[in-house]
Image (cartoon, rainbow, N blue to C red; front, side, top):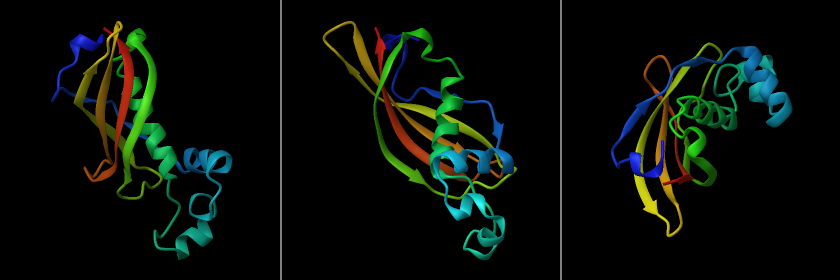
Length: 141
């Protein structure tokens, strides 16, 4: 979609994705090697009662699900900002995630581009909010 096809308040729902324990530990081993993502025994004794996904993985999954809607398509130029990132609830192995996306701001540029800002809100299969964050991208008009 081009810049002029977006409007404030526009909403999208992504498909769902289930995170397995293997997905969580593989991601954590490479990008966030902390015990609560890798060591089941130690994680079970901690505040989350088991392995949880890295918040960075939850953010990445939320972004992936949004991109896969193909709403920007080839009209996207580049991301410009991420703001107000909140990891609200832990994500556990077996959680099925989907993201609701709402256009919250539009800023037209002088050239042939504009900035689209969306709020990504990700829920698990119990309809509990697990993540929220703003994403701004530069797109063609």
